[in-house]
Image 1 (cartoon, rainbow, N blue to C red):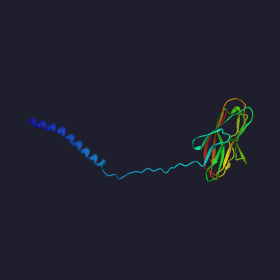
Image 2: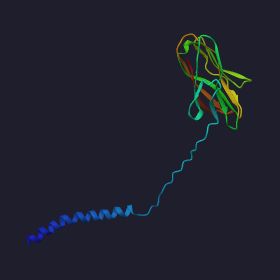
Image 3: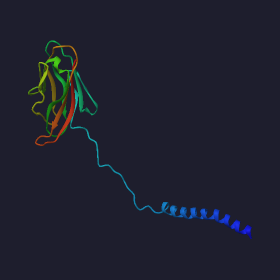
Image 4: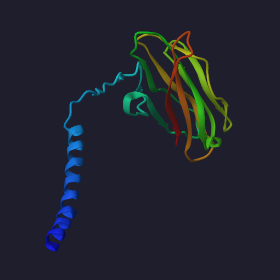
Length: 195
């Protein structure tokens, strides 16, 4: 009789945990193997498009236009005598509507070695002075908006550039492109480097 009781206890010790695991497994697989009622489809509403105004290297061949044609570096040689670069960078309106454009200085370094420079936007028949450097100081940091009509090109001109000492000078500008009669605008970065 003692054998039967001890074997019954051993049976209970091994069988009850196995039964408990089977019951738990059956409940969990029912939920896992059940019907799918909820599902999600992800679809982006965003798209990409080419910019309406692009930057291109001017005929002076002194600019480097970066990816997506929305930023550039203009590197010109400053000397002890006056120099002018008429077509350092082209700003092209590929959009169907008119735009306004202007330059704004937001940072500079080692400008004190530049005795003179004037940055101008022009279309060969009219122009707008944007930035002026006199005796090593930026005296005009921004200009008036200049009209950039549909499918037209305006040019960045560096006029009367002259240095007073050797070295490198930099100033960083935003090209602000505004939709006429709105407050909507886009900023492109243009860095000027005088070596």
